[in-house]
Image 1 (cartoon, rainbow, N blue to C red):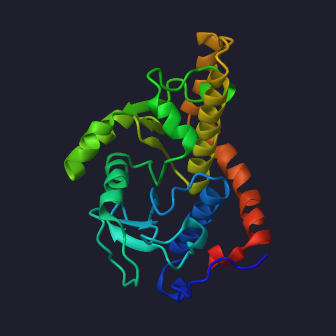
Image 2: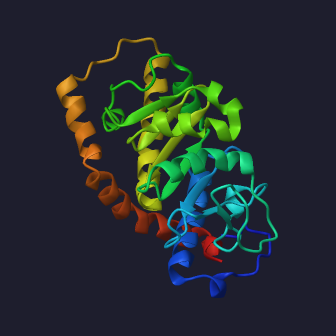
Length: 260
């Protein structure tokens, strides 16, 4: 397949630690996968990763204005908790966009990766008054594991970060009302699995409700059982790490330029 990344970007591999370089490769892969799975919204939304060893002081995020299909390990911008670049880069970031991510990174030491999307299914469920229904196995994974955040807080900018962190609480996922979805995890792989599962749950709910038929109920006991799997923290990390190498091989077989 033709390399779709038409932008020439000097490699920064020699300027960063091996740990940071691996984080860059994983995050660039994540952006490519978001585009591949149809969750991208032109240049809107972000996924960020804490730079290893920075103690929540430095983060990697996409260069603003670049399509997710074009993001590479070297094009990612290293910023501080206020969204200011801390390493020379020809690219800028969207400080307003990082408000969402910094709120979570600062509040949660376990939120190494934070992913925010505007998928059609995610937006649709965020608009539904009842939120995510425990009506599918995918949705049940989030039983007791998801928060809700009102869009009204968005207008408060930096001042709205406390409310965002509060509404997420200890959960791995958040439905941002009338806006979209958010997931966070200890690795890019875990976060991608969480978002993939949440996205599928939302898509299934929209499809099921579209026909107007009554939904078959899931008992509270069963929903809680699935929710406890993700709540114990090891389940999503294990499944994410299991799927991740195959996802990277998929990218390597089609367009490995994300590694540049």
